Image (cartoon, rainbow, N blue to C red; front, side, top):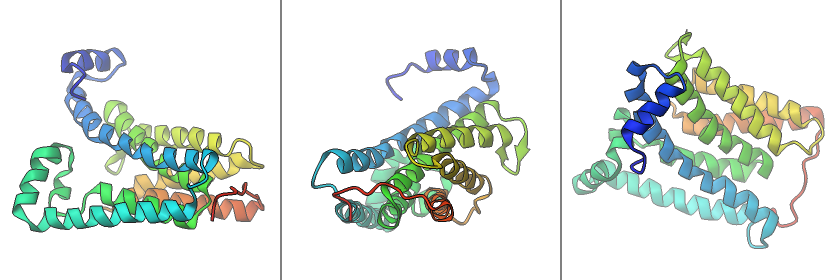
Length: 236
């Protein structure tokens, strides 16, 4: 967010009703979570590739993303065990890491792993929706909670939770709009993903649990409702 003047950003946040005392934390969260929007590259390339190319298949996507995940796992092991690599990472992107991530695998690895698992096991519409739950839904929960949250639920807020559910539902409903009973799939997937974000145990990274458990919920609903999702000619 270096292209945005901090003063202008602060003024904009005050304009939309964010309290003055909350602004520094909101800006910090925007910098950290904003980076996560690069994760949109995966679902966008995947779904567009299935629609408009012949080389993109679930098998190809799993192999490619699995290779990237493995490479990132190796990089993380070097960061955690080689001082020179650790020092480099702290200088480059240490400000975007949570304190607990500095001596353990960070959220990017778990996002890559979760995305790979979702693409391998679930229909493309379900896989993409579950990734959006994490990238956009979780971001919304954090931003709204920090900016406007007043009703606490543990260390989260009711306002952030409601915002995440609404965003997740809109996104997934758009994905399933042309499918029979798609609103039911979207509703329950969004609700489950939101509850996972709200009650996720601290010892498990929610970059892994939100997409996978959300995808399981949507898959269950398709089976329970007898919904036949479209078959992509270049899928597995």
